Amino acid sequence: MLLSKYFLPTSKEKPLEAHVTSHSLMLRAGMITQQSAGIYSWLPMGLRVLQKISNIVRDNMNQCSLEILMPCIQSADLWIESGRYDDYGKEMLRIQDRHEHAMLFGPTHEEMVTDIFRKYVKSYKELPKNFYQIQWKFRDEIRPRFGLMRGREFCMKDAYSFDLTPDDARATYNQMLVAYLKTFADLGVYAIPVMADSGPIGGDLSHEFHIVSNSGESDLFYDERFDELMQNPVMNLELLKSLYAAADERHESSKVPAGVKLKNTKGIEVGHIFYFGDKYSKSMHAAVQNQSGELVNVYMGSYGIGVSRLVAAIIESSHDQHGIVWPMSVAPFHVSLINLDPEDEATSREADNLYQDMLHLGLEVLYDDTHKSVGAKLATHDLIGIPYHVIIGKRGLQQGVMELKVRASGKRDELKCERHLAQEIKRVIDEGAR
Image 1 (cartoon, rainbow, N blue to C red):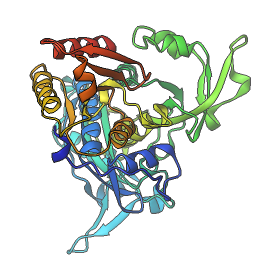
Image 2: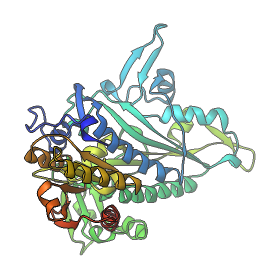
Image 3: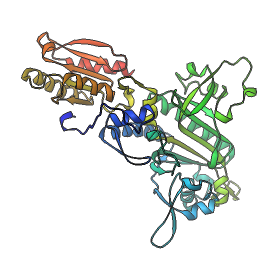
Image 4: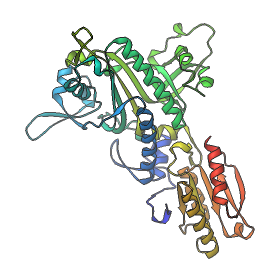
């Protein structure tokens, strides 16, 4: 992508309305723009990151769940039937259509997916079932703040499972717990699972997933062995489940096992999973015939990941004084190719050729071919946080070299201007990604 043809409205100044780092950097990096309180438009750079995260979440969910897409607008009748219509209070945006039917902008979709299930699934032979979607939600926060960390409209991955017995349902819950650990590992973030309250969702088993960050709103208390075991969370699942970890009000000092070294830090919630048994199937009559021909209520769970919130959470945990530092897995581009002297014919020819070579190798490249000052260019690319910067200038080319900078560490290496330069850059990037 040529930066001269892109839309990247960056800013040097910290926005007055931004009170946390992610909000400030997302506005300054031209990723989002605010439309009203807690509601944002996603600009090209921000949307690329959102789509990267969505794709990783989708790849992992496709291993254990079936993707569907449910409407944002729901009938209030389903929520009245489940007995949950008043639980959200003013957070739920209630509306009426032209026929004066009560509708709502869905904050979650347990009722709707249960209605889909009960229409079509009648026998234990069709179980288990697990559906998910990536969809926009709305919760009318009384004080939306911190940008995407606490907005009103947000993108969420929500999944819902249906099983014949409580044991089956808990096995599905554990399967989704593993899927979540793998998902966050693939995203390049360290998310600790902690026991949590179920809130208005209901149920007696619940885990939240928190990215460790000093700017988090939640207090985390967890066994320090998590730090080592989370290097390979899927392999260490059973041990991880046995370690102490709790958030906020679920923490009880008396329940910490003797000899455990406890860490206390802040965390940003990015996922939440629930097992709630027959809470919805009972009230909404979602029953199937069992092996004996009897009608029995199914047992359910729900599983959420804050897809848009993850964009902000990753920035909160991965930035420096110059700007964002993206993990490779979710970075909007792999490489910033920065032409310091676009008016010099030889420099531009070398940069143009390298740009095409990198594209042919499958690298995602943002090519800065603009005529801004050197300082402005370098500051912009530090701000937007693309993992690798290839810097080409007239003076370096006269010596037969260009520079490769690793954004995260600031390490700089000279590369010789030779025929297979793009392949060498890709090799370095591939090694870094591992």
